[in-house]
Structures are given as C-alpha cells and as structure tokens.
Length: 99
Image (cartoon, rainbow, N blue to C red; front, top):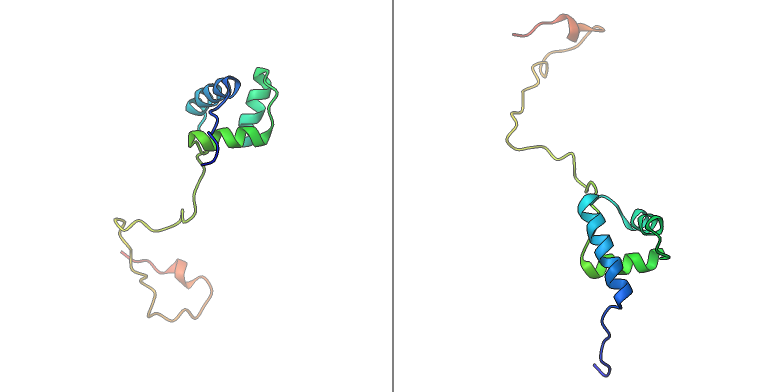
C-alpha cells in the first residue's frame, strides 16, 4: 500500500466494546436496533458507523434463514392409504376408518 492504514480511534473502540456487550445479550439485534441502543446510552452515532463497526468485528444478527421447511430425513413418511380408491361422494374420506 502507498499509505499506512490507521487503526480505529479510541471512541470507536469504546463503541465496539458497547456493541459487543449488547450483542452477547441480544444477538438478534441488527444495525438499526444497535444504533437505537447506542443513542439511548448517550452516543451520537448514525447507521453507517454502526454497520461499519459491526462488519469490522464480524458480528451479524441472528435471523431465520431460507429453506426452513425442508423435511427431516429421520422422520417416517406415512403412506397415503386412499391412493387407489375412487372418492365418489362428499366426505367419504371421513366415513372410512383405517386401522
């Protein structure tokens, strides 16, 4: 590099410590709620700074990911017993009893 990178300022280190403590208590807080938390504590910060600091620390909010409805391979799959039966009337499925 043609310049020496600066480290984080003392104020940013204080903010990062506060963010780390809050993240251990509430890991589901995202950037917006962390910003509100820091403002409630008394720090004048914006969303961009909080986002940058959280990325620098490698912290990310915990939230539900995609593909939550994939089947568990250990669960038994029960056969559909009416597959080869012709349903000719209403509610005939409810009348039939299978053991």
